[in-house]
Image (cartoon, protein in one colour):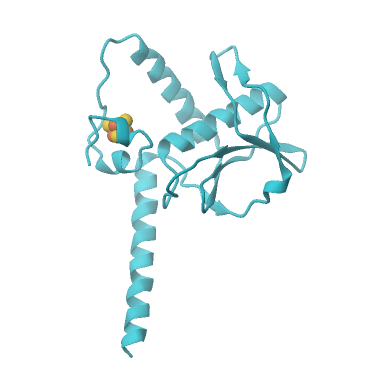
Length: 172
Ligand code: SF4
């Protein structure tokens, strides 16, 4: 009976964690990323950076996967595998999706973030594209300022941020 209670407690904890993580992602306005299985044999290395002159944006995904006539960028991350992709990683993959569309004329349905023990698919939705364009516009504005400070009071954003180790304005 004790082990049944334990199993139920673990199940309940897993459900609560899932709901909390999903709520946090919705609050950030970003897609969470689906866990996917990928076969690395189909991955092709990208030799040259992709470039978009309109935005002055450049970047090189680690791999491109050709699938059903489309292209999917892959970003490889080393180190700890998070429960959900960091916002900065989601934006990085979104930028690669943008660059792939501009460079090859094919809009990726999603990008993949490959962590050491799990892969996440991030859907390249019109909402994500417009969040990316907003972010780039804000970065460009901030570049012209001498000092840039944290723009929010949301601890969960700092907890999931890929820059937290080097940021001296983090909230947690
Ligand atoms: S850790 Fe720093 S850069 Fe990251 S979200 Fe928090 S304040 Fe912003």
